[in-house]
Image 1 (cartoon, rainbow, N blue to C red):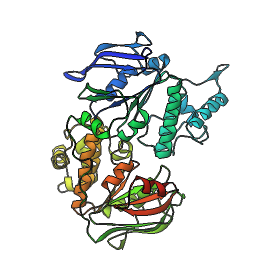
Image 2 (image 1 turned 60 degrees about the vertical axis):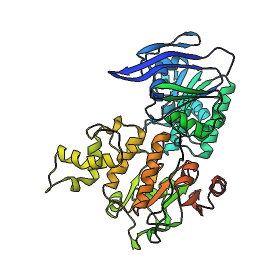
Image 3 (image 1 turned 90 degrees about the horizontal axis):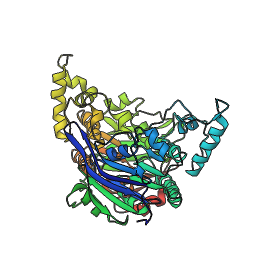
Image 4 (image 1 turned 120 degrees about the vertical axis):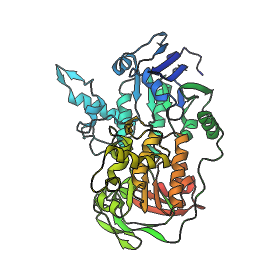
Length: 495
């Protein structure tokens, strides 16, 4: 730890919402030029604490000091004015504005009372270049991949010249190359004396990036490691408060019967070309590759969300190439998308409604339904998948892991034959991940063909019987479980 004075000090920070106490007297120091990894399961209090530091939420008790002076920001703008910037896990870009306009939103450079667009775009281009993004700053955000939007959020924060940055799951949507670019930028900021609070569920990153680890559980700080070089298992056990025997469940033996075949599939946009593979009943088939390799575009095409220009999808030998998601759903092929908040659940609607929406024929009687019937229908799946929430509760109030279970529940109610999961544990803590992995294995045991797309190499290796690696929109190879490891997969992914 640095011998200098801390940039930020927190003492006895508490937060209550009515009778519920979500933070229990948290103490924390962040020093210039250090990265403090703030870890914990969903609901541990990390986001609440970060929101207090960044001025989004006001504490119920306790005090903060910034550069040795009392610090109590009344808003995010007040925190930014002090030199504290936060990059949220959830993207907050406006799609109809340009990249430059998003980066400088609320603080546009002015000249003679008018927007200085040339200066804004020049400064935005510098920020993008620092992160290795070769994108024109005048381009609209609309249509950019989730990973590129995340990097733009980071570029936005870097233009603040902040003394303290809070990064909440900054690599959740990034591939290996993009993550490395971010780490290089963090190293540069550290050398400039910037303090960083780094929140991530990707524990393998922590050894690379953290100088110190603070673990939270149930709203309290439970452990501090004075180095980032801590075994993942040790961190996980501190997070969940118990010993973990294994991270991934055992893979079931798949059937010999082929459920899904993809032959010569190509995109009209060139995002993937001539892809062929098959998935057996009861098999978990992984798809790996760097961001931009075409993984998401491929599975969206297989499930009817994106068009295809050539090739065929077959189910049990029968051509079923879907033209729309409805085609795929009717044939028993469903997609759990990478962005569950935008594409998986309706946040302002109840858990019960979300589960019932694609299953109204089953939740109706003689063409009629009721609130009670929908609740009764959904309750079975809420219980069977272990969703921690009530049927009438809004989906937006759930943790990431429980939202993912709701997405799974609505599709499992249809008894699908093929389930495609794109980034199934993105932004989900380690404890909740294990329950998602159990659900995946239960699907396979029931004879469902499962496709898992993941940027987390450890995850795709842990859950898959075979792995197809993609590079630059092409199929680089398919590896059996015995031949698949981090080296063999990355060799194919970087061809």
